[in-house]
Picture 1: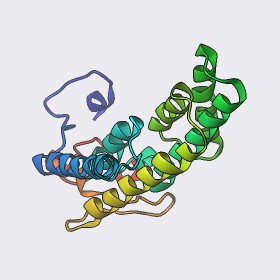
Picture 2: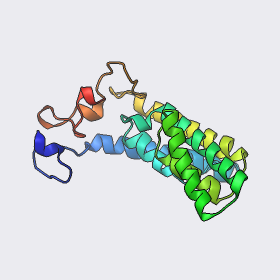
Picture 3: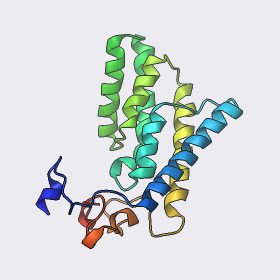
Length: 195
């Protein structure tokens, strides 16, 4: 349906809203993921909080079918970006241009490694802006990202027909989020070939 593919075109036949159940699962996953890293950070005094994890939660729990939400992208994107951000800070210190350089190099690094994860840009930004050292790469970034991905694996593979991760190049079954549309349309306007 052409009018459903034109950005900004709102039509009653375009069913692009997730179901109530999908909204509940996304909210539950996000709450459990962020609550876990927050609890460990505050209760056990572990530094596991990075603001970019909020954006990762959106992808992991509400858009788990997109390539940028796959474990390789989440873990690799944060890791590459944190390494680059810390390295930029260590080499040139904190300046307006080093923040921009950190984000720019993080984007190119994620593209080179095929681990594009948009919240990674914020991870690089935070690494430079908050003047981090290399321990930042391990904790909070890597450990926190592992926790968020582990919870996404549990949430998306418990019951129902949702599957996470979606494997590239494999004829994967369309996830539930893309199966329950009106008149056979996906609520996210996805077709199996789009995955």
